[in-house]
Amino acid sequence: MNILSRLKSLLFRKIGATSNPKYAAPALECSSLILLCGPSYGDQHYKGSFLLDAVALKEWAIAVGRGVTSAQSLHYAAGAFIPQWLEKTSYQQDSYVTLLDKYTRGVLMSYVLDFYQKGLIRVYCHECHEHHDSIVINVNEEEHHGPLTEWTDEWLCCNGHVLHKEDQEIRWIYS
Image (cartoon, rainbow, N blue to C red; front, top):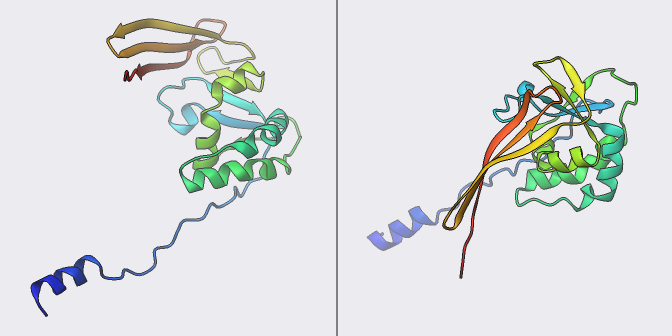
């Protein structure tokens, strides 16, 4: 076997079929409250616990959730499964708080501000030990550096404690 043939066989050899990971539906039924983000997940930017109302989320999922798409197939599968998962919601108030799997949470996290503005979220402040239906949203320190705009999002409870703080940036591309 010449060198070129050997090189081709090494580069283009058949590799055993790789298994595509499949989305596994959550094992727990959904309770009336879903923990979307906060210290329990190890979130660095979320200091408060953001709790979603599962009943209201069900209505959102039917209207919007089916159209949620993602480039990652497991996130897409999770997004498509959300309405079906919420159908089995346990409506017993405060029976337990449901934790989300990585993929369902990945889909829902991009809607945190949307959920708050629609009234679907209650926030628990770990500093004052209170639930809040409303928060104060500040956009601080917006700076422009050529094609770069930077600012800090800061969300506070009614008592002034930080619930969420994150540096943001947009890079503008001019043609």
